[in-house]
Image (cartoon, rainbow, N blue to C red; front, side, top):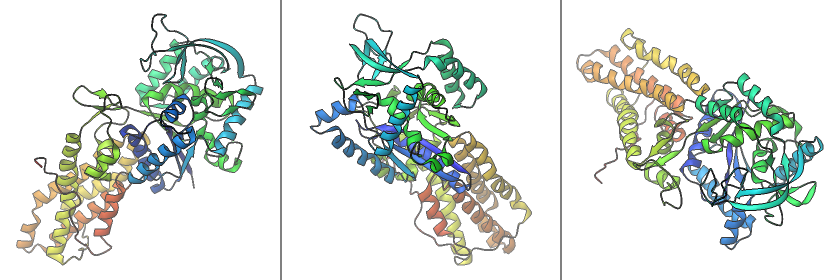
Length: 493
């Protein structure tokens, strides 16, 4: 059985999960389920990033130790993944022994190979981003990323030779044009490494300033920089220097799912780290956009009080409605604007009117005309077009899923649903019954059942709960009518 290894980023535990976290994990879950359905041996990894200055400070503010603080937030992430029906195989925490050992082994290898060196750093530092900035204005300098004030520090640290591998990385990008998706993110990353001289990466922090991290094996005075530590989870989770059989089976990763805000770490730091370790690079890095909020399309933030709670959305609209909206409304990779009115519009139009209506009216006709017994398929000519479209559907979805085009995959499914609904209106099965056209009526209703079964099969990775509900109502030769799948939402209430 062919393996397929996919990962999400590790989520930082200094804040509760929000819609952005749920978006990444739902997308990864859909791909994992799709690959399992296609016969792959899937390893789907997610987890939490628990070290660093932000966690240490948040823990102090909460009156807890960093590890106690981390445990609290880890529980919130695991609860959310359960509510969203996320089928991950492994959950890694950067405070686990398997990860700590792997990080220290990597540091040891790179230090002995001469890719890590000690030097004094004097300059600007952003605590919220945990990033050094070599170029900053002298008058009240601010972080280029988060726009918060920088601190001036002077300290001895360890540096990783990113600059040594710049030319190699440019050549690698040029030879692998689908290494980063979507293509405009690939272009963004490539233009950055071609137009900027890569600075060596500071990969340690002195314990005197911050001690919540993995100790550097060759310096008891330093802990590992949180980003260098976190990226290594992708190999520590599959047995690097711990389980060689597992590592040989699953590495390299086939897909890394990330948000666009961490593209530089994944498209520049991570490939160079792997090259320095003489390890294969991942197949693809998929960088999705952000969900913005309101008419002004603002980024969500705690300070603005506009963060969307995924659990609240699931309680209001149901898990599959939420999953469907996030992956259908915006092509994966672009930014989207989130609103409850947009969810309701998709729910009433696509789920209630289209899918729910097709299922319910078909069950009603099987019940009315055949006492719940599904009639045999007769393959009559006037139903051939829809049967052809239905037969082609798995291949179409396969082509879209190859490039992580989730919205297009769902669009292809809905084309078949809408064709079937249109066929009902044009054929008017109630007239076939009145005119005693028995064969035509049998084949027509058998066709609708075929469509619904085929749609349920293709929907299973996207909307697993809905697919199971549909399958439970259409058995081998019986149809069991239940409650409507998606009762319309009355917006006036």
